[in-house]
Image 1 (cartoon, rainbow, N blue to C red):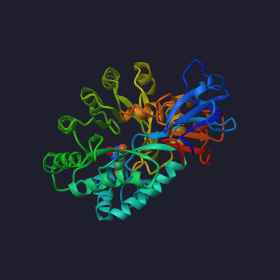
Image 2 (tube, rainbow, N blue to C red):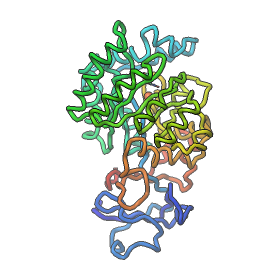
Image 3 (spheres, rainbow, N blue to C red):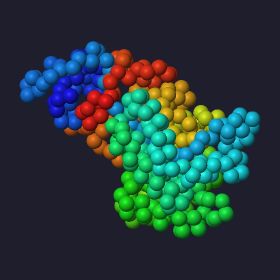
Image 4 (tube, rainbow, N blue to C red):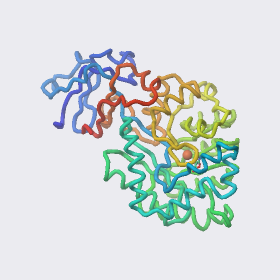
Length: 400
Ligand code: DI6
Ligand code: FE
């Protein structure tokens, strides 16, 4: 494509007033050197763009490229066998306490070559790309030793060399601790040194920790956050997924970008997140796959003004899925979000959960990361399950 071109005859969403309707079907977006040069109604197109080549999208909907702000998609092996065990009554915690769960993926990830890790991650990434995703966050956490944690992060970064995609990496060394070692010894001897080494190699955009009865206590995660702040890295947390451990409050105290899961979040956590402007990342795929019954306190989060994001949590144990559109459907069906909230959750708010200010919105100056859909109503994105409604994907201005 030329450096500057016009996408015309579009409906646009999410789109703030003055035209809350996304310009019906006469919206245009000017893609100018990889960024959005103009967005609005055809009648308001600035004269300087009038001669740029036009490509009609025939009334289709254009949204920002979707943003999956929470995944663990670089790993080895499969947990289909444990899925079978759970169908006959074993719980997620029981399997993990018996050395399965995260530990079985750690074993398979350590055993996988760099090439194998890359090849399996590319398969998952291609499914995401086919669904209009342009930015993906990827966490480490299936190594639990320095070498493997760094290999996961390098593999995640390398995906950008193989596909038109933007990757943000998160160090999640505090995901579990190896059998035969105490949590504190693991933090001191493995996790914190690995985090420093990964940051030194410029492999880390943020730091995360799993605050849960089967993982780390809030005070242990706090040590991880202190070390992250010393390295100038923003933090996030897996909190209140299976029980209320006060993780969201802790994260808010460290100005976390996001607190994720939150099924068991209490009022103090909600208030702290609202105050700190910490995004709530909802992961209905894990809620569904683990057959949870306790939902996150959606209405209270809304009332407190906490921004809501949605993500796949793509991982082999609790959320073996790659479709962010299916997650939008689950956000609506299981958690009661409106289709508009679901779209904001995987665009504007997804970007916020990653600390990104240059994508996720249809605004002049944003990166031209766009998804063109084979329909005009934004609610279709949350309503449909399956099929392949992506008409065109644009990454940094390039159609691909
Ligand atoms: N919460 C999750 O849902 C994943 N990790 C985490 O901290 C599950 C990881 C797994 O079961 O492999
Ligand atoms: Fe997760």
